[in-house]
Image (cartoon, rainbow, N blue to C red; front, side, top):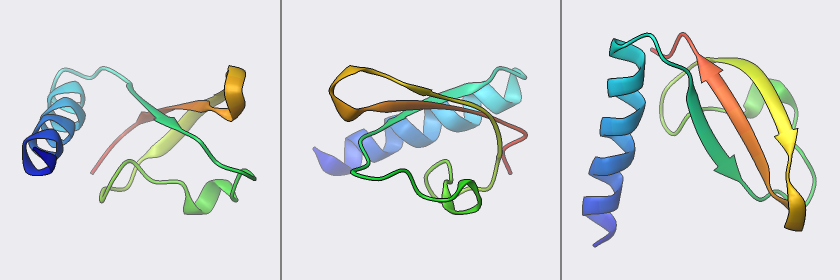
Amino acid sequence: MLHSTEHALVGYILGSELYNQPVNLYFAWKARPENATIRPYVYEGTIQSIKDLSGGRQVVTFASIH
């Protein structure tokens, strides 16, 4: 099932970029890393925003993924 989940993630990231939509990815860091090290999976992208959520989670919005 992990491989199918990976396909869905890649499809979401690339599909969003093809339609010029931002990509929202969720993370759960113990301590937030430097922005330069935060990436959308194996791709590069520009961070538009980082929002803290409850339970120590964050949502990062990316644009310009390549």
